[in-house]
Image (cartoon, rainbow, N blue to C red; front, side, top):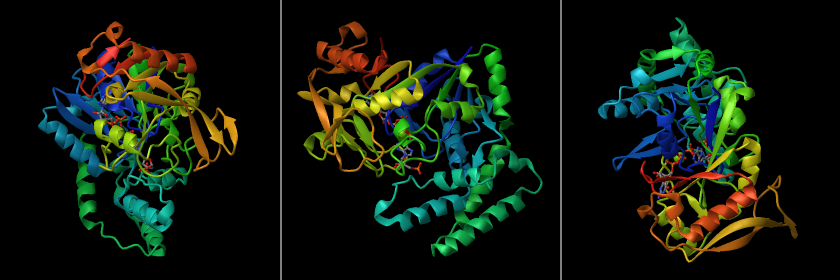
Length: 420
Ligand code: GDP
Ligand code: IMO
Ligand code: MG
C-alpha cells in the first residue's frame, strides 16, 4: 500500500489539522514529516477546539498510530505541554505515539538565537514564530545538531553543553540579552518524558507498515509557499514543506507515494512578513479576517488576508504533484456579493502567468470575478445541494488546475465537511 500525503498549498493554516482528523478514520497511521512547533493545527471535536503543534492530528482516534518523523524538529517543553493537555482529555498518547530517534531537538538556545537573528534583521525580519525552527535546522545541516536518539546516550549532557556553549558564543556576538534558566529546567523535564515514549527508527517502522499494506497518511506542516527552496525566500520556513519533504522526512521512496491531497482556503492568508500578491488592505480584507477568524493558532498574530491566487495555486500543484484538491473555509465567503480570483499577474508592465523569482510590490494581480452564493453553507451535507454559484467557483478551479476538488470544508467542525 502506498502512502498518501496531505499538505498545504498556500502560506500555511489551510485547515490541515481539521482535514487530517476527518480523514484519519481511513488510515492506520498518521505521520508528521517536517516542521515543528511553528505549526498550529486546529481540530474541532464536539465544539471543543484543540490545537496541536508537534503531535500528528490523528491522535484523537483510538485505532491510529501517530509518528513524529525524522524530518521534524522537536521542542521537549512544547511536547510535554501537548502530552499533558492530551492526558487531561483522556487521550493515552503513549499507546499511540512513536517518535523517530533521528528527529532533531530544539534547544532553549535555538529559540534565543531565533529571537536574536530576527532582532538583528530589523525591518526585514521574517516574522518567525520564534520557536527556534531556523537555528535548529541550521545545526542539522551544519552537522552540529542533537537528535532524539542522543538522549539515550550516557554523555548526552556533554553533547548538550557543547552545543549550548557554541550558541552562547554566537549570542555574545549579537550582544543579545537572555535568560534561559527556567526554560532549560522545563526542557530537561521534557527530555525525561520523551524517554518514556517509544523511540524508534521510523523509516524502518514506516516501510514495514507499507509492506504490511497498512494505510499511512503523511501530514504536512506550513505550506508550499513557505518551502525553503520554492517559497517566497527568504520569507519562508527552514524545511521542505512540499511532497518531496515527505520522502526525506519519513524515509520513504518517491515510488511509494500514492495520493497527494493539496489543501487550500477558498481565499488566501499569510502570517508573518513577505510578499502576498493578492493581499487586501481594505474593508474586504478586514471582513475576511473577521469572518474567517484569521488569527494564528501558534502565535495569535492576525493573519493577512486576500483573494485566492490561482497562479500561486497552480505553482504549488506542480511542485507537489497534487492528485486531489481540498478546499476549506468556503463558508467564510457566504456573505460576499462578489468573489475574486487572481488569474494572472501584471509584472513590470508585462502580463505573466507564473510565480516570478522576485516578488515585492512589483506585482498587480489580474482578477476574474464570480458572483457570490449568499447562502449559509452550514445547512448542507451533500455536494449536489450546494448553491450553483459555489459549484461554478469549484468547476472553474478544477478546469484551471486540471485537478478534482474532492472535499469542500464548510466549517471548523469534523462534520462540516462535504465529500464530492
Ligand atoms: P492548519 O495549520 O492548516 O491546520 O490550519 P489552522 O488550524 O492553523 O487554521 C485553520 C483555522 O480555520 C482553524 O481555526 C480551524 O478551526 C478553522 N477551519 C478549518 N476549516 C474550516 C472551515 O471550513 N470553515 C471555517 N469557518 N473554519 C475552518
Ligand atoms: P501551520 O502548520 C502559517 C511562518 C511564520 C513566518 C515564517 C517562518 O500551522 O500551517 P518559522 O517559525 O518557521 O521560522 O517562521 O513561516 N509560519 C507559518 N505560517 N502556518 C504555519 O504552520 C507556519 N509555520 C511557520 O509566520 O512567516
Ligand atoms: Mg496553523
